[in-house]
Length: 281
Image 1 (cartoon, rainbow, N blue to C red):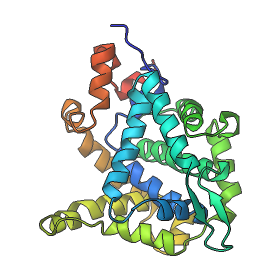
Image 2 (tube, helix red, strand yellow):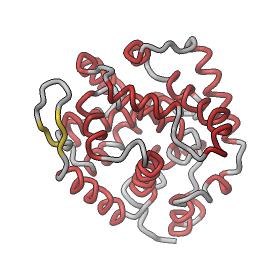
Image 3 (cartoon, rainbow, N blue to C red):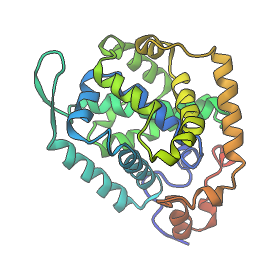
Image 4 (cartoon, rainbow, N blue to C red):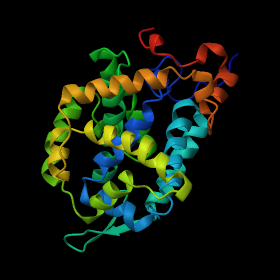
């Protein structure tokens, strides 16, 4: 079958990595990390109904990642154009200075991008997804493509682990936990749900949220003011969770909306099926 393989193609690290179920834990970690930038999180709070439509926001983010990873080139470019257009129309007020600023400032877009991609890479590797350091660098380089889609200059985006570490070191003095970050933290621990589902939230969701929080870097724990287990304990829990989730048949997991992977396989053929062992091909 000769369909359009899209921006990343089945030969990319991204194609294999983003099919893993631990992406959901990584996505929650990304939200915790992104909330540490006061201007970035203020932009979210002022321009979205985060508290009442958080599930919708999470699904829209998952749909964007799925479309840009597994969709056609046209679909990915269209999704990027839609995001850029929306961001160009939005502004927020700096919580400290009162300054009005656009949410599409390169500094903010870069922070959101790096927090997201770092979370995907960190959680999946730590949970047992097999990636060499060279393959991890390749993954980061590939995501200069997704950075371009949201409006960043790819040349200004970290392309390997050393550049990403240097970026986080440089941005750390600007990170803080204010009222907005506290609101995100509170939501992630106690998201609104139907009363009948509250017990399930306490048993299942909170464990996932705690695990995502625990996987944050130590400076994030210090800023939030809530301790985390020892790193070795967190790694064991991530590996155990990854092992459990990966026991669910992939075909069953991929039936969940929006089914990007199944559509990509229908378009390209069975060889497009994501799998960890294909990373080194």
